[in-house]
Image (tube, rainbow, N blue to C red; front, side, top):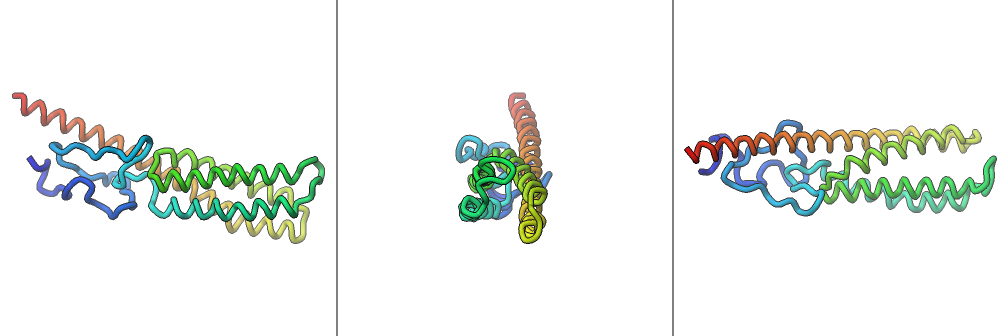
Amino acid sequence: MTGTSATEPGPIGSGPPAGVPLAAGRLPDLPLDEPLAVPPGPHRRPPVVAPAPSWTGPLYLILAVLLVPWTVYLGLVLPDRTTSAHWDVAWVGFDVIEFAALALTGWFAYRRSTWVEVSASAAAALLFVDAWFDITTATGGWDLAQALILGLAIELPLAGVSLWIARHAETVNEDAIRWLLARSTKQAEHLRRLRR
């Protein structure tokens, strides 16, 4: 037996190009007599059900690396005190946490890990908070202009992309579960027919 219908895709793993996730409801109908491919590792999916687009990994890793000089810059130029002690440490520490969220999102997306949903959600929240506090704590003049430019042009749009990645990963995971349930049901029906 080679498959369940004449319109099935080719061999297992065929479908969209590597790294291009399938849209909702477009998981392949693989032949019932062929086993599923072994996942490439724990919490990882094969390319056919990657939870994030292939561009996500490189983009977020680059963004995380670009955040390093910005964090160093803040550590050098922010005053030691405003109305609270260790103002510079607070912001540098926050940016280090933001770096971790961006780097993890990039790494999980690159490895096609199901954990990308969690890290992208965390990155979105941190980016939103960063934009909020940058704008609301700016002292006016160039500080406020810089905060508005970074917040409106970089941080908030990137937070939106991060939320989209998290939702996309959730959708892919839900589709994969439905597909696996449907496939196991077909397999069970097929095995019942063979036993008769």
